Length: 293
Image (cartoon, rainbow, N blue to C red; front, side, top):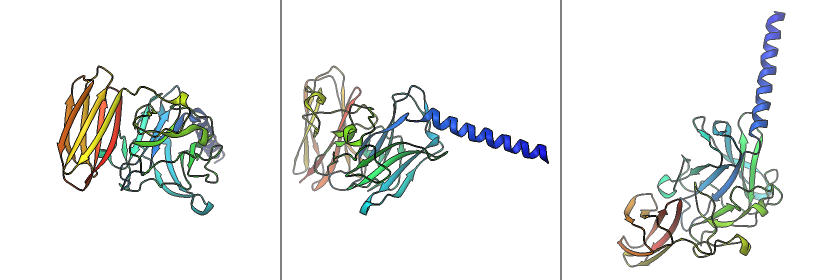
């Protein structure tokens, strides 16, 4: 009996030591890198991007993404997203959780619900938490400060339901100063890719030093009755792929353009509908939404 008790105690000590070692090894290795929770019209293209800023693979199987409602000064968890089948995340790589795979590039995990997945703020918060011992590895408070879920002060940058293709973006990409307001700005929506600030196509709330002054891919949609006209400009040698989707994720049309400085494309569509346009050139991509009268 005494030997059995000692064996159980030794196992408990070993397990506790393993948990502590795991938490220490993974501490501060992943960050919330980008969030788009608010779109024009229905919020059905929401996504959250996680980045591994460490030097070794991060086992996402031990990660919980916790969404917090900060209404009326509270801090109430309203959704937890996790999956033991999530693969390890390589250093400097991204993991994207989305509401609609058809409307979000590079989506790695589709979460439920498909609309209004992430609350819009004033204030709300997101945390990355260990499902082993509850250690919080990163947190973002937006639209104000949520008690217990704010690093420094809550970000004053606000995602927009007026401007398309923008998101709350950590800037510079992956940089964490432990102050939400200093770390996040409004940038281009770039799920699964490095964060980007674009003064032509995206709203910018940062200093002039943070601006890419010569964007190499520009997509300008124009809508008329029953048609979408696209003007595409590119400053690089890679071919361009453009696709048009309905807001439910159905493909309407797609086209492959070779290396070109400028191209035009006109597409027949249904009237009175909102469409999502995605363009990709090499590692660059952008998303635009257009309402057809």
